[in-house]
Length: 62
Ligand SMILES: [Zn+2]
Image (tube, rainbow, N blue to C red):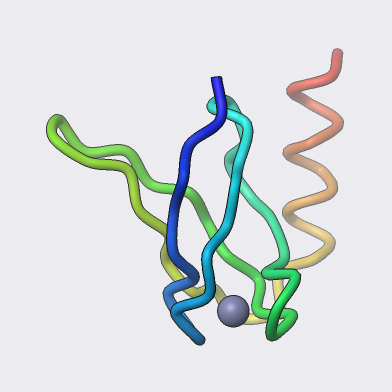
């Protein structure tokens, strides 16, 4: 399932696989965390945490 979200930084449309937790906006390059609340899914801008995001991705893959 693909979630249709908006970039928290530039407002650009993003299509994100449901289980994705971190991504870089393909419009402005902002690092974003995908947050889930009970009623909505949204993005939250992060500081430069590329290394952390990569570590998390490895954890998810394994
Ligand atoms: Zn953006």
